[in-house]
Image (cartoon, rainbow, N blue to C red; front, side):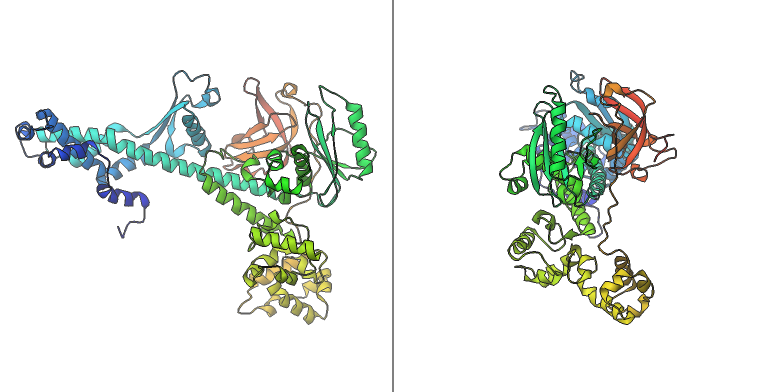
Length: 610
């Protein structure tokens, strides 16, 4: 036990001592058949039937009944033997084959899983997305799934271990070994490998989801601009909201440009009036329209907006508005600052995962929460505008401290320095130490309060400025002054070269946003539905989701197209992230269109990228 570090092997050691439900072997022991089983295992008795006759009494009806009970005891002994279990386990690891077959009579219901109707592949080579798809179909009762090694080879190995004599006793043991493998060992190890393979697939899917979420949260922000957000609709119309540069709601109303109402001229006139009245700088979603005012037009994913609109956070923010208004506001705000808005939505609802509902939900939540926290702290937040929900993700702050900061700000006005944080109720020295470097104050008295330089390092920057005979503000403003700094002069037992390099890098671009500038994008105006597509057609698209097997691309219609891993580049790649990222603007070519299943196969091979 002390030398065992593997949980599975530890379970093997514990197995013979583990409390058991009433098994066939236990029932045989209660009938007094264990001595007979021991006799058979010794494999010396030439006439086991004669010895078995001595046990025919009570519940043991005849000789065969006695021998069967003894074999049950031997079978359990074989199944609990550590060497035997490892032998079968190694066979599963080397040769384990995953087999899936459609449940008879469920062929039509299981159409979307038809790729797995009669599939068989090596378990160790089965990709995570295929395994999760097969397991989902199994859970829905549409596929029968099994994992199996070479059964004959496994039984032969076990017989070599346990059968030592070619006599009647040896034959009884061989029969018990075969029963043990089929009834006990194989199902047990199969369950073990099913669990392990599912855990590995979960880890891979969670990793993919976390990376997609990271890219989505770090999408380029438009910044503080006046924005018009439009949540599209047909019968109920399009919900239009106008937001100021801080994301506050100025106005909302419905327009009906689409069938069945089709009031396009009226809708356009209303939009024109709102754009002029509220001095809109950018419009989210609209395409191919022209306005008198010079504005930018963007397309934003509405994924998760309906989840946010019905949430407690949305109700607290907009108690007097219905869910359609809240959803449109969320869409407009995520153009201004995707990170600040998307943290309000459960990451699982954003739609950038791979079988996220099939994986271990506890592990998924932990990974996604960590990803959100990392992104928020990487970018930093404006202390005077951040919501309590956004502040919650800052290192050292929890929900209570975040709300206390917002309450303090409401009562006392904007923060003018990071030191003022110490006046916030329940803000201790440790919490301040953890959070201060991630909180920015753009109009602070001390310019370092709008950088990622931690307050505990201010003295270093101040000493640098003093040595150069200038102020901190002048040092930040002048590249020539910064080039004169010799970082080795400021080394100390508590401040190393990596810290000094980080400080100088931050002074070069104080308060820099690691997210790049936002880009304008336009879909092909001639493609409105899947019926407009033709094989060989080249189109602009936006990467919406990345999986292990490729990237899903929005090409401006209801259905997304798939660029398979093999079609992402002219060279071999093992990971789609080597070539594409979430929200990346790309050009694709249509390979094939499956109208029945509404599937579009795309390629980037041979397509010139901007």
